[in-house]
Image 1 (tube, rainbow, N blue to C red):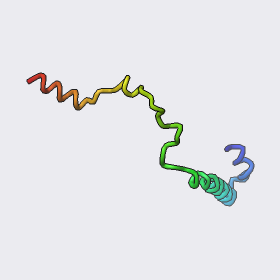
Image 2 (cartoon, one colour):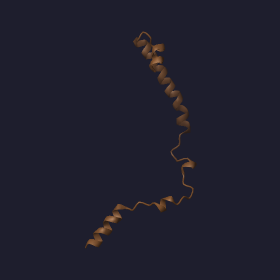
Image 3 (cartoon, rainbow, N blue to C red):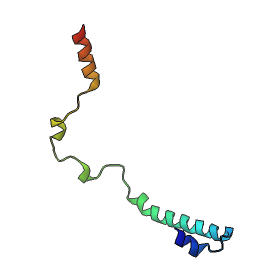
Image 4 (cartoon, rainbow, N blue to C red):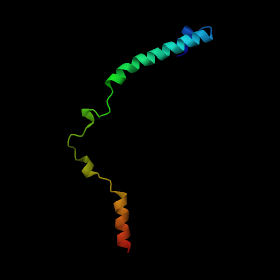
Length: 75
């Protein structure tokens, strides 16, 4: 950014900064249009599990169930 500022606003005037602001805002709007069109809320196909059993091999116990079992064994 320093090189861009030195080129675009060498005199550091409000007009130069305003034009730089409008340029940057325009770039942001233009680059966001493809994102808005192509973005999805669902996970992509490659993020889904392919039938892996890793979750059953390394399952984390439900702490609520464990506490209930401990309460029942203490009484």
